Image 1 (tube, rainbow over the protein chains, first blue to last red):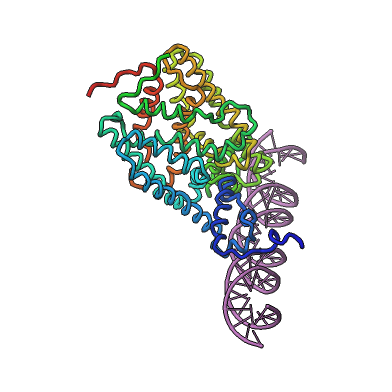
Image 2 (spheres, helix red, strand yellow; image 1 turned 90 degrees about the horizontal axis):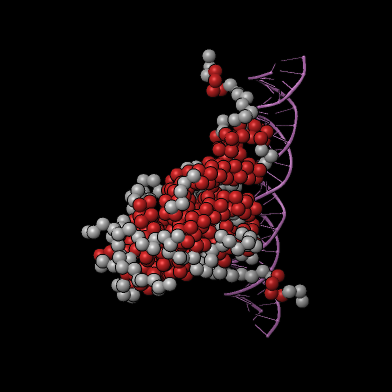
Amino acid sequence: MTEPESTRRQRRKEARPAELAAAALSLFIEKGFAATRLDEVAARAGVSKGTLYLYFDSKEALFKSVIEEGGVPIFEEFEARLEILGDDPERLLREILRGWWTKVGATDLGGIGKLIIAEAGNFPEVARYHHEAVIVRWMTLLRRVITLGVDKGIFRSLDVEPLSQLMFFPLLMLSVWKNSMASCLVGCEAPHQISDSYFDTYFDLIFRGLLVAPRQEPKE
Amino acid sequence: MTEPESTRRQRRKEARPAELAAAALSLFIEKGFAATRLDEVAARAGVSKGTLYLYFDSKEALFKSVIEEGGVPIFEEFEARLEILGDDPERLLREILRGWWTKVGATDLGGIGKLIIAEAGNFPEVARYHHEAVIVRWMTLLRRVITLGVDKGIFRSLDVEPLSQLMFFPLLMLSVWKNSMASCLVGCEAPHQISDSYFDTYFDLIFRGLLVAPRQEPKE
DNA sequence: AATTAATAACTGACTAGTCAGTCATTAATT
DNA sequence: AATTAATGACTGACTAGTCAGTTATTAATT
């Protein structure tokens, strides 16, 4: 009668790949590809290293798999939901930006951004894939909505390419920050942490910069 | 008569540390800490690995040195130059943002940002040092100038903390991007590269969002 | 229902290769 | 001649990847 469940080995062929991928993703984000030990990945997934090699051919294959599984499904799901919204550009734009944050930026998937940034030099083809399959598609969505707003005369006629990047970068940077610096600054006295009013100020600033006729702010 | 200079070994005690640090910085930025080989650092600096160990105690000491040398002097130099400017907040703000870009973001030093992001998980104390010694000081400068503008009634009275981050993040992200994704997207067809009008649109957007009374844009 | 045989998921000790760090030797400088 | 900067072969610790063996599970037999 010695810990019947927890110590006995389990056979769960279906669940292993996803569990291993999740463990690998979190460790790759924490430590980077090269500094991550496969023994540690296996341990975090609750299996031995040998099991890892039943499901993935090599460390690099594991890395590629983690990148390729993450990001794409979420984008496609989000894109599908967006279709049914109207054609109010400001509403759509807020929806996309908030949507990216809640579905990606604020979740574990946000760490993929940091990971890609860190490993692009070592895995250019993986970075290119992620760029094509995820980043470009989100940016294209943004550009379409911004162009819609410009055509309708609601948004100012600025250069759409840099504009979409300027919309996105504060969110992306925040997500990257949370997955790198944030965890090592715990306990550091408050200033220069990300405050709650970040999003309010973000939307205020960009929409005032973007709209032809911004709403008046309340008199003081 | 076989290449007298290039093959003969040189003794240049003074120049070695800086040359080794520069070689290490560029490789750490390209590949990350763990994936960088000390033989490669030494080769790039034109010496052997043994020489590296004459000037640095360990790989980690080399890393710390590279981070601690880079960034701080530039900030202090810039801060000193800024004193002699007037007290026009908009001009000062443009000067700081442009100054950061030309002195840091667009140079090799910009890569330190990417490096810190990538390695913060493995070297939290180094990340904390860089945060305190560089990031916080630039942000404090920004906040001081923004507060000055708000007090003078030139800038809108928004929350200064997120505002300074929102000013800075598009530049930081651009710098990080150039040191990670950019190099692996060469030859990728034009869209989603960073265009020349990025800065124009950046300043346009943030100052229209920031100023109480933005300049009128030219009639169409 | 109980026993036995067959399957394959899982394990971890092992191998082969890599790389941070050392040190005996070489050669430039004083 | 003495000093010391520079070298690169060497070592030992570490880890990606392997594989012979173990055990949970399922199927067949009694």
